[in-house]
Image (cartoon, rainbow, N blue to C red; front, side, top):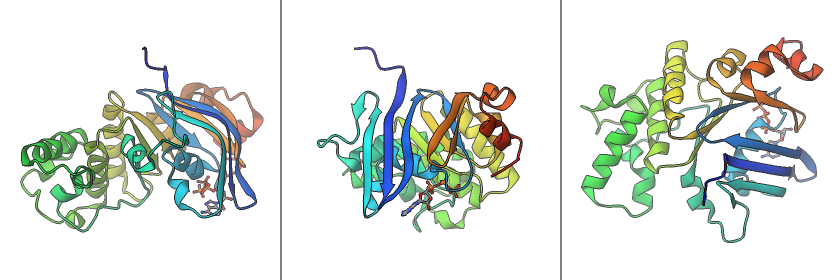
Length: 254
Ligand SMILES: Nc1ncnc2c1ncn2[C@@H]1O[C@H](COP(=O)(O)OP(=O)(O)OP(=O)(O)O)[C@@H](O)[C@H]1O
């Protein structure tokens, strides 16, 4: 059977934290092998949307989710879906690089080890493949057993990318992955992302408009839990159809 064109399809998604509705009937598709930017003012539900795609909100007490989210055609909220398995398919990167206080090698193989992989040749191969794909192999290949915490912030973030890639996900979610980094490290991460989209589908939350316009194929603008406008990034930035989008893009609020 042919794979669906969209990697992720979200239909009429509502999410409540207790009584508060953080997502209000969101319908959106994320295409495979594209970078989609999610933008909007603080509190509009960007992180909440990302976390519904790998069910991280399951860990928050008193959350109610209605609607459907499908990954490659499969309902991720179906009763038979294992959230731990799902999070291997849908990896996530956070604002603060969060390597574990172990060696670079042990960080990268963390997910594989949890799955019970012990074969040294398989682990070695995964480390090299993932660090190369995260564009940090050359910098660390001679110090794989050094503590990952001894690296710079930008290098740590690329180790975290490698850790996500080691489990061979389909999707990488990135929640403001460069906002804690200096401009040079940020542009290295952006370059890495552009290479990664050949093999993965990427959804990035960013407050940086230039970043969204530089790297994303499509952009989604949210306001107060609602998707206001979604389309090719060029159109959203050059010819927004909604006044709210135009106001936000031009810096009139947010
Ligand atoms: N764990 C939580 N418990 C209760 N309310 C929450 C929780 N997480 C987020 N919210 C609320 O849900 C709404 C959306 O938050 P969310 O973090 O998704 O927004 P955001 O667009 O990512 O914001 P920012 O750009 O500031 O990170 C906000 O009103 C926030 O206060």
